Amino acid sequence: MHIRAQTPAQLPVDVFDEGRQIVLLAEAPGLAPRDVSVSLDGTVAVIVIQAPHRQGTQRVELPCRVSGQADISLVNGILRIKFHKAEPS
Image 1 (cartoon, helix red, strand yellow):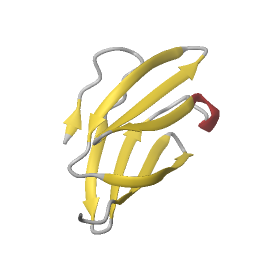
Image 2 (cartoon, rainbow, N blue to C red; image 1 turned 30 degrees about the vertical axis):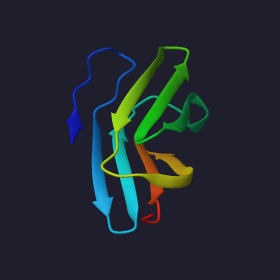
Image 3 (tube, rainbow, N blue to C red; image 1 turned 90 degrees about the vertical axis):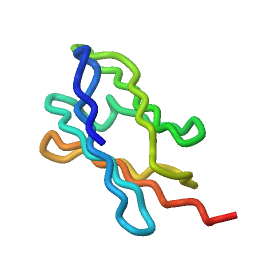
């Protein structure tokens, strides 16, 4: 899944199913880790960007349910968000 940027706050996002994890990768040049927060709304990852030069909210549909906190890293302009898949009910 790839989402094209429509506003300065939106990031191009790729979603990968890596077995027991779902990984989101996005190009985020000029952002610092403190500028990004992530939450869940059902099976939607909500990415909030609050930087002096860039602000907004982006929603990314995940391919399955996930659980726990997101593991977020931002290195060399690449935002990596990892979620653990929820156990089947």
